[in-house]
Image 1: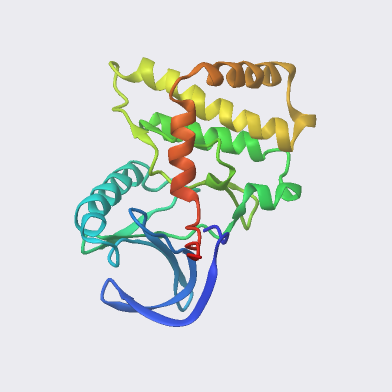
Image 2 (image 1 turned 90 degrees about the horizontal axis):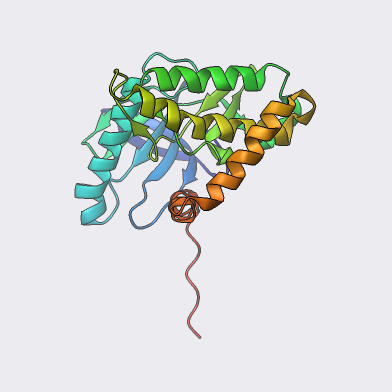
Length: 238
């Protein structure tokens, strides 16, 4: 999992699923309605915990369980897919445990991207769409990772959408899937421009023009930015 905003806490131990785990890193220590995200280790095993247990009553008993249950529902739809975190379990419905993607954010290892990376990433997104899962937030580079073998991975499904992949919803899925496709192509234009076709460059330009006209674009970006932003330190009163 990504190590941005991470704090080392290798000396601390916490119990998850009835077993002691070493808190290797505090990836995000959030306030309010956001979970604490921790990197856990137990020997060779590595998990990520999204934990609402130490939050206020509303976050811990209402918002947290609902948001984690929804994310688990989406990840269950992608069960068994390589490059997608897999669900390990729930801890009192207030903490979601998922497998750890061993790698880095795409922006941190752009020089390691080979010529097949974005082809594989588009195929991974297509496989999600075939299962009815639309990520819709791949414009954030922090949601795309490169694993230790150079393969793509997609994380953070809290802004995603599921539509049953049946005859009724399939046309809508194809339309919304373009958001993920164009977001990926936009990164390809940025990181591997020498491999982009003129058609792909035109598609990205069209996507950026259309996105500016979408009235919910700014609102969605503000919401997703807030969900990933590290909490700022409280200002001292003079």
